[in-house]
Image (cartoon, rainbow over the protein chains, first blue to last red):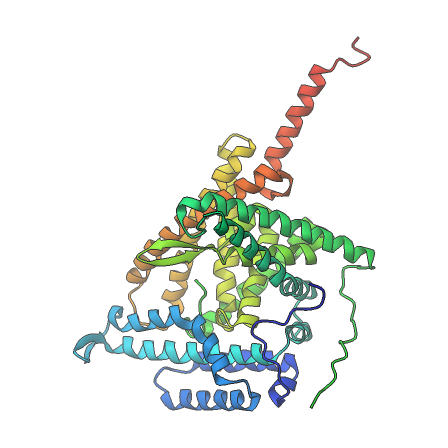
Length: 232
Length: 237
């Protein structure tokens, strides 16, 4: 657990999309998705243009489509909701495949799906082409409060440490015949999470003391970026 | 309950973004009062804990499962300001680094889960704590009530936002019924898990639980009074 952990979403590469400055990518992402969200449902051609543009960027980034597709599953619960919308919406009814659905609801479902999918794919593309450290530096350049960026940095730094600690506790529980999902074993899960909180809190205290002993004065020092050698 | 992109229209998303930015700014100041220069590492580690705790699923019914939202839990464990800050950071990291929750809905998600979830959780917790006897054993039940109330209230606020800026023509009363039934069920799970976790921490390290401070102070005062009464001092003898 010495050096930084590679993040689960980041896909290593050297494309122009990878090399673009992180703060530009974040600002572009926000502006692009905001534009998509503000577009009326009925402008189908506009969504086609957005999708073509986005797929162009994905192709340029040379991140494999399968890599992104696998990670689109975060959208699934939302797709289920969008499919239900035409059935519960009001407005004039129309027939689709013999089912009576609401026409404005159908448009709304289309809009939700199109906007949600473009939003998820755009976010995934930025996350896949930018190192977490660069994203943090980009947030700082976009004038997010320094403290907030520091907290996010610590969260990313210890994410794998703490989730793997929880994973080990869950393995220990399962190997003793305990099913963490069953309400019967909630007391054990509660104690596990309680222990995880105490451990995380105490880890935070140790990290703080270690930082103080290295001269921390409330600001993170601007360390030179680790010397990555560009290998062709 | 992560709101994705396109669920609420652009003006509503921007408005909640402004509310969220204000809430985070105030929480940053408050957290510095609670944690001082320990803010960054402590809030970072607590945020990581909240993220890990959200990975624990519980069955809600009808074959689906919900997960801990952690607003009330964070408020009781580390205090309201640090709680708002930690849950906000979790949501920002999830949206930006994991594409979980829309990037334009980040303000909506912070407003609902971090601001409403933590603030309602903390206020209910403080109110219930004031009614119950000032003992360490009262902290977990008060946390349970806080969690039970905060989740449906967050869903009520979502319904209000949806009525203002929703992009699907669904009657508000239908949204309200669906959201409330669903989140009452989630709230019960949230209440049980929150109470168990808070109870476990109170049992082992009550000094770490922000919401247990008055009870802990009362216990210390009582202990000190008993010790003083039991040990005859030099002057008295």
